[in-house]
Amino acid sequence: MTSKQLRSALHAGRRVYGTLVVSDSPRWPTQIAQLGLDFVFIDTEHVALDRQPLAWMCQVYSALGLAPLVRIPSPDPHAATMALDAGAAGIIAPYVETVEQVQALRGAVKLRPIKGERLQAVLEGRAAFSPELAAYQAERHRDSLLVINVESQPALDRLDSLLAVEDLDAVLVGPHDLSSSLGMPERYEAPAFEAAVREIGTRARAKGIAAGIHSWMGIEREIGWAKFGYTFFIHSADIIAMRCTLAAEVRALRTALGDLPAAEGGSEIAI
Image (tube, rainbow, N blue to C red; front, side, top):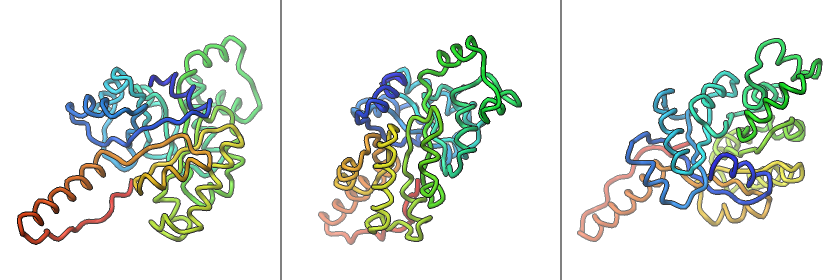
């Protein structure tokens, strides 16, 4: 999908599918493009990707028909504009908890090139852009997506206010951080966690905002979440798929040849 098609699908309530990509290998994009995805989720919050490889990834995935959504390291409007300059189709801002953060991100994603005091006055409702400038901004940013991560109890408490900010395209649940904020880290089967996920999806869809979730916890769980209004699916990640698939195959090979399976160490990948 192009960024225009992705934004249209999200606002129309159609389901879209992507995966998280952390590898900047030049062999990766053509393989990812054969998976039947609509977009890719490029993470720069937990992955050390500099501006140059990020720009390369955004340009290549766009050329292959996969809209690149970039999660920036923090809900920083300057980081958002840098990712957009690199070619991102949209911004995913992590750990957003306040209306002020969403408004600042809106300014970066939807209202540039205006910055500084004039932008702040507009965001606070104390001023307005001229009709010509407003039309220019609408055309310039019509396909740029603004997505916020809802991954904490404070964000859940303020969800209706966050959803009310103009120009927000989608909310994305971050399961690892949300479960930790709820006091039950990685207990994704816990009723309280499931209730929070259900509440976010239901309330977002009631406001006409797309609801998404990043999941590596099994297809059945993702299918179940669709019942609560989720249409924006980020399934697994290249690094998770590699680890799980190779671990299972190496274990099966060793077992078939009569060798004891090697000890499996390491912690879960939290992205």
